[in-house]
Amino acid sequence: QENVLANPVGTTLDRYIMRKQSEFPFATGELSQLLRDIALAGKIINREVNRAGLIDIAGAFGNQNIQGEQQQKLDVVANIRFIRALKNGGQACAILSEEEDDIIYTGNDQGKYVVAMDPLDGSSNIDVNVSIGTIFSIYRRVTPVGTQATREDFLQGGRKQVAAGYVLYGSSTMLVYTTGHGVAGFTYENSLGEFFLSHPEIRIPQDGATFSCNEGYWYQYPESIRAYLTTCKQRGYSGRYIGSLVADFHRNLFKGGIYLYPPTEKTPEGKLRLLYECYPLALLIEQAGGQAQSGHEAILDIEPVYFHQRCPIYVGSTDMVKEVLSLANAAH
Ligand code: AHM
Ligand code: MG
Image 1 (cartoon, rainbow, N blue to C red):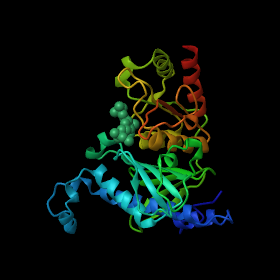
Image 2: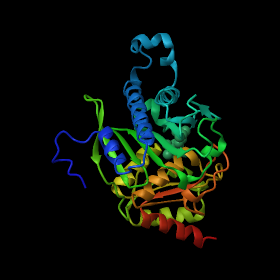
Image 3: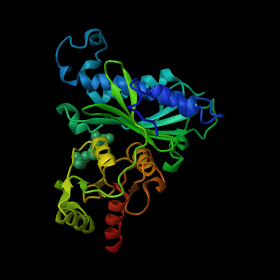
Image 4: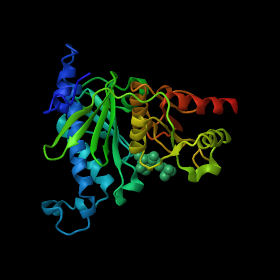
């Protein structure tokens, strides 16, 4: 494990990605390049997020006024920026976004990868200066290089992800990602415009004392979930719910805890989307030593059927996820 403090200059994300790539002598560097493109998209979205409060001030965006984009909502802007970065990068042949119904073609049919993403998650927090995030999930395409990507490329299933991660726009901006060999976290240094390795090998505590869910739905939750939450309260656990998935997930990843979005009467499949919310976070949590379950199976084992599919999710510290599942199973 790298001693970050011993190296005052620090390891930039670019250098880290390059060093990791050299561990795979047969790798062509295309995935590395794609990860760098995603980091660039993160920086660009970070800039937009940082000046979100200025959005209604005439002239604040200078030249961009003529593009008219300053009138758009920030999640739409993030979607545009992200797609543009991947188009310019050339490694992704197609994108699936929460913001759009169908596949977005980048025009790079030679690209070997497809990316599913939620460009700006936490819509209820965007306008009120509360942490929000970008989530991404990467697959190697199954269709031949040089042809147009198809649904199959995106519907491979969570275990086929070759990389996944998120950018959290919080008190600091952080990028956290995995390529299936552990989880690393990088913190953005604004004045240098670089992500620096700050958390080389992230492991989630085995157990925790924090639960994160929207308790406003209490009377819609299944009995077994209410029983679990009651147990948490009897033990004096903390309730923490930001309402931004990335931020809630990130806190629990570092401190231990569980995030729950159970089925409710109104949303029997839960609310969160399988392809660009649940799969990527499930890969991250498994790589960090935690668990992500739907109530019936591991999230990564869920068969994907359609793009904007939803699923219930219980994700976080292994012991907590196991306990909620044992109560749910006992109820059946
Ligand atoms: P969004 O994609 O419209 O932003 O919805 C996803 C968000 C998550 O970030 C968050 O965890 C959840 O929805 C909150 O939902 P609720 O308001 O029902 O608790
Ligand atoms: Mg979302």
